[in-house]
Amino acid sequence: MQNLDIRQLGINPNHWYVVARSSEVLSSPLGITLWNHPIVLFRDNCGEVNALEDRCPHRQVKLSHGSIKGDYLECAYHGWQFTPSGECVSVSYLEANQKLPSCKIRKYAVREQDGFIWLFPGDATKAESVSLLGVPEWEHLNYIATVSTIDCQAHYSFLIENLMDMYHGHLHNQYQAWASAELQDLQEDTNRVDAHYQAQSYYKIDKIWSISQLFFPSLRRLHPEPLDVSYVYPHWVSTLGQDFKIYCLFCPISETATRAYLVHFTSLNSFWRLHELPVCFRKFVKNRLFGSAQKLLDGLVREDVKMMEEEQQAYRHSPQRRGYELNRALVSVQRLMKSQATGNEYLTPQATVEVN
Ligand code: FES
Ligand SMILES: [Fe+2]
Image (cartoon, rainbow, N blue to C red):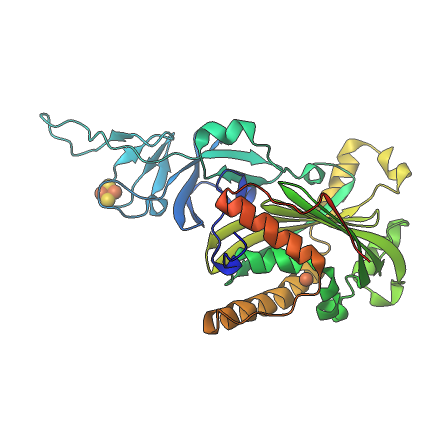
C-alpha cells in the first residue's frame, strides 16, 4: 500500500460527495461529473432532486441536454421520457405493435441538505448507513455564509494537502487570512485526520462593525488563535478561533480535475443582543450579509488553484520526482486517502501523533 502513487488514487465511492449547490439545480436538468461518471440532476414536480446516469439508452447522448416534463426527464434527441428511477415510460412514435424498450438507467442516492446536493456514488444499499457531513451553519441565523467554487485541473490529493498544510499562509500574505501557523497536535482515525495548529489571526468579530474588517485592512489586528483543520473524508472542515468556520466540500471529477465548494462562515455568536431580535430581522441580516467575504475567498482560491495546477503539471512531466515534505499532517492525510481509496484496513502507527 505504501508504494501506491498518491496522484493516481481513486476515491472511496461509499461516501456522500457534494455535486452541486441547491441553487444550481433549477428548472432544467444539470449535468455534472463525479469521478468520471456523468450524472444528470433534475427536480421533479414536487421539487425533489433526482440523480440518474447522464446517458440516454437510445443513442447514448447526454440526458442533461433534455428537459423536465412533469416528473419525467425528456431526452433532447427523440424525446424519450424517463422516470426518476431511470425507466423509460414514453416514446411518442411507438407503433401499435411495439413495446416500450425495457431499458433502465442507473439511479443514484441523492439528498438535498444545507444548500447543497449530496450524492452517494457507491453501493446504494450502504447509503443510509453512511453519515453525511452536513453544514449546520448554513441555516443557522448566527452565521454569515460566503461560497466560492474551486475548479482546479489537478488531482484531489493536491487540494486536500493544500487545505491541511497551514504553513502555506505565506502564499496568501496579501489577503491576510492567517499567519505564523505552528502544528501542535495531530490525530488520526479511520475516517479523519485532525490537525491542531496555533496561529495568528487578523480578524476578531466582537463588535457589530467588526464585519468591516473584511473590507478595511487597517482595522485588522494580529492576535493568537487556535486553527483546527480536519480531513473528514472526503471533505474538509476548519475553525479559526471562535469567529470563523470554513468547509471545503469535494467533488473529485477525474484523476486530473477537482471541483469543490469552499464555504466560509463568519459567526455572530458574540452578539447576544442581536439574538433577541425578531427572527425575520435576523434572517434579513443573514441574507443581506451573504457573500461578505467573497473577495477574500475568491482571492485565496485563485492563489491556491494556481499552485495546485502547477503541482499537477510538474507531476505529469516527471511523475517519479518526489518533493520534500516537512509537515507531518500531510503524511497522515496521504495515509487516510490511500486506505479509503483502496479499501485497505487503516494502518495507523499510533492513534495520536505528538508533534514537537
Ligand atoms: S437519443 Fe435519447 S431519445 Fe434518442
Ligand atoms: Fe490556501
